[in-house]
Length: 340
Image (cartoon, rainbow, N blue to C red; front, side, top):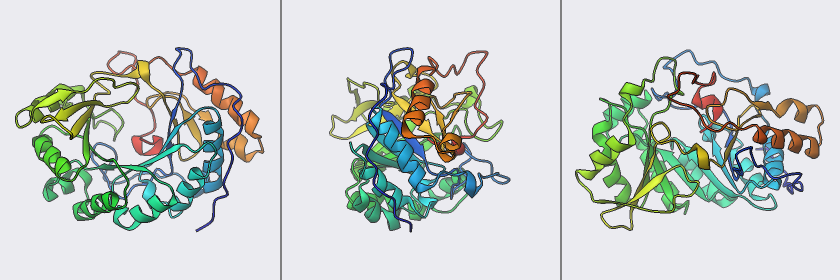
């Protein structure tokens, strides 16, 4: 693997504050659009056109752009994809990000397939937390949702993450009506038994074309109703800018979260930016526009110029995603190409 040189974040040119007074503190940083699974709510079974290798940011470019954003006030960096662990240099990227000054909190979202092998090296490189996608613990239903028979690898990855100290380990689940919605309570019991925190995420209009409908959505209120059949849930206050509303399970200390991005949007408190694997800065998951950072970066722009582009993009951030409005249009990119 190629070593990544540590970078000291450039001094802030201006705060990353948008026109509605929201300050960006959280960066979702995609490493690749490729994935080792084909989840039905994210990717089609076949025929996916991937980004070319030359289009992807190199490890040094990723660390440099992240360093500039940290210099503008980003405090938390989450590595995403696609599946970030398919990149051979993922450990080097984590090490480069961990060497930034000031050092951001470092987390990673993964499908868990390769985590048993990489949890230890990632933790040693500076990764602090991990989110693992797990939509069911039933092997047959897992295969139906992901189109791959890899549940055993994911379960081993969860155990490895716990053993490596990547805590809290959070498990992300998307419920699909008539497919795995009956697994809600089973997933919660699984997470609680392992000291993990489960988070249910409402399915969003970001997957394969034609694969989402509002009528088929398993809503946050339905999730809570399903869990309430077997558990007592007590709402926790002070959510802040976090995407998940949280409840204590049977009095605690275990908790469960629900991200209701569709039915109860939290855009007014959003602190997130997204940098795609090909170097496009997005201020909203559902944004119709992007700011190209890769082209000026490779053309020799200095850090001050790149920071100006970042600041301008954030100032133009929309008020909200607009799901449910007549004018709403899903982004042209699928979730795997945007980064979660």
